[in-house]
Length: 215
Ligand SMILES: NC(=O)c1ccc[n+]([C@@H]2O[C@H](COP(=O)([O-])OP(=O)(O)OC[C@H]3O[C@@H](n4cnc5c(N)ncnc54)[C@H](OP(=O)(O)O)[C@@H]3O)[C@@H](O)[C@H]2O)c1
Image (cartoon, rainbow, N blue to C red; front, side, top):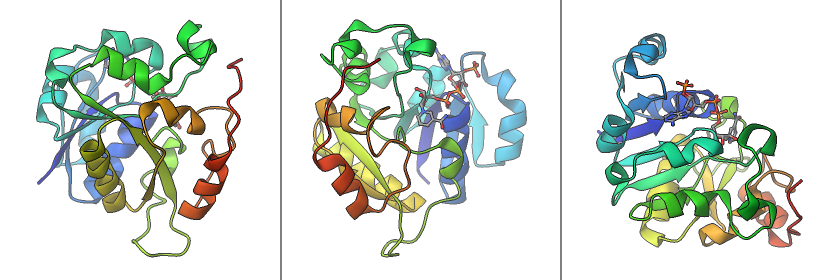
């Protein structure tokens, strides 16, 4: 059985956990307050879930999800992430995260910042473009006309293939936008942001996006 390590037990982390468990994965989930604070969530999630420290969740995960506020990524320990495929759900909200000059000037993207912090991991943008509550309830079998598509981006092809397979199992098509530097195309204030789209619709909405200055 494949284990997903989940860092962040809030909206995204808990809902990816629900979807993963519904599709026969195991999850080890961590937050900032420690495993004992996760007993209610783990009870709700059932036998396929356990709580751990951040190090334990990363270590256990064949895929690891980072679903914490962007301002906290610098607090993540670097060593446990070595060689891990890391799904990055982050978006930039200055009112929550503070102003980040590299994003305000479009010199970088949120996922490139995470990749810089975790240089020996393989970061793939994923789950940033769907409202958290939709994740466990909107998946559909492969081939359905109305199947929802989610964007991914990353610098490592093999890592993207693994994330696309995970999304497919959860019931989603994946649209590969290219490298992490392209991931701004599906971030806040872009046409596709948190919209329900099929693969063709997502391709259309991400084809000619204008990169505006972050406000
Ligand atoms: N909410 C959505 O629908 C949505 C959709 C797409 C993308 N996103 C993005 O996904 C990210 C997570 O959003 P969210 O809504 O899931 O956030 P959230 O509900 O506020 O949950 C954040 C989680 O991160 C944990 N955390 C914070 N700092 C940490 C650290 N240093 N180490 C380990 N865990 C830490 C918190 O732990 P504690 O519980 O212990 O405080 C909490 O469990 C954000 O960048 C957000 O913009 C959100």
